[in-house]
Image 1 (cartoon, rainbow, N blue to C red):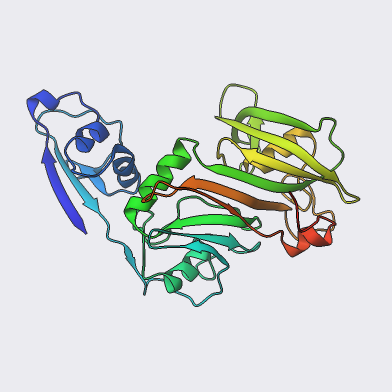
Image 2 (image 1 turned 45 degrees about the horizontal axis):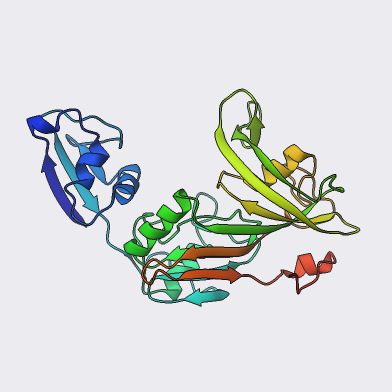
Length: 302
């Protein structure tokens, strides 16, 4: 653990804590510092703090940067479908039914457990339970997932996600027939006012802005195959937006019904981003999963 200490001078009074540290913490960006603050690795006068805290003269700050998580932590020899890998990152085709990171009720058998066995080290930004994890997919969602092997890659990818520079295209098998061949779904997403485990589109000004564009690819006996492009990344966004449109995902027992499917029929089909080190634009496409093929979806979609 690398720790640095700072003291606020009279001229620093009133400055935001994250801006103060970004100007003094060497190569660490403001976004990286904000991640460390959220993870509890920054203290103000010995106590956890917020990025927006305003400094007073004499304030003492301590910043601890966690090292990469070693391979021995939570490692499990689990099969991984690797689409791409280099010294900075790894792109996986996550199977449906696999949780991304350990949490209550799922301490083993996760993507993180498998990555820790597969990789010598991962970015430590996410802490011991989420090393290398830049973004997540729901347990039942299959498809493209990128993880960072070092903090530089993690920081770059996180910035791209925050700046909406990532290409995220999903395949969704939805209920019913769509009135329009394409469209855009927008609205603020937040917690359902009654069913707190669910998200919903809120009409009262609360929630966070969200946007999904969709394109109908084909109509099938079971439902409609839709290509969904995420422009934001809210919790359950596609599931909530399609439910709001009146066409919930088939197999989604939270926002729709199982309808004869073993899982929600959502697949992270395409993922694109700029490589953190080389600057090259990388684009990946994961194979159509078996349950989609069984529903009549062709393996060679354009």
